[in-house]
Amino acid sequence: MWNPDQYHRHREARSAPVRDLLALLPDLPYHDVVDLGCGTGDHTRTLAQRFPAARVLGLDSSAEMLAKADRQGVPNLRFEQGDILALQGEYDLIFSNAALQWLPDHPALLARLWAQLRPGGVLAVQVPANHDHDSHRLLTDTAREFGAELGGFTRFGTAQGASPVLTPAQYAERLDELGAVDLTALSRVYPVVLPGAEGVLDWTRGTALVPYLSRLNAADGARFTAAYLARLRARWPGERMYYAFTRVLFMARKG
Image: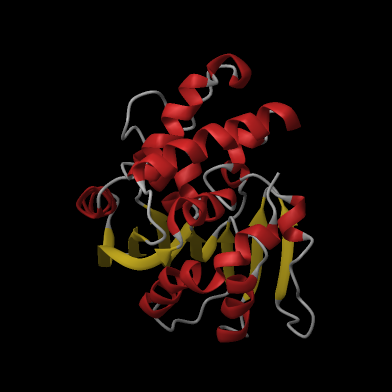
């Protein structure tokens, strides 16, 4: 289960990429806006305040995250619990911050979302691209050790780098095939300094660890966390760890 308090322990560092994504948005007369995987709705609220003439929907699958969402004083904002792949309707802006990495087959996903954009509409997405980082590799190694308890689940598969996230060039090429104009796609590293292995564990507790621990009972979850931490300590034995927090951002308008 998602824990909004744990997720927001690193709020400032996690917010830097979405601020860059928001800066990429053109100021257009949007009528219908959706924020996919909105979490606690902080950035959905920003969208609603920036575009007060638009109807803004925040969509997330987690009841725990949505329970923290605040729409007070923003009449054009609403939230719904639901699956991104079950999204219905057409939109002038489809926005997603750090959510689509949980979904497979991004070329097909882009085509699906593109079909739900009205002519002239904008697709703006930010996804983490740290699947080949040691923090994730060691998580996969731990998942292999707990294969029986997890039922074989390893999030992105057993092969390192099997994340669905594409390169900026691949996103740009696919969007161009779909007929995108005013296209921007880029990769950026956001430096984060963490207090050694324990800091890495605290960081991943809010995101990458969630799908594993949600599949384990309390005792197995504690053993899994301890085994993962032991690997992290072997990799980062000191009290300071530089985490190259890498993100892919892209924005495109439908011609």
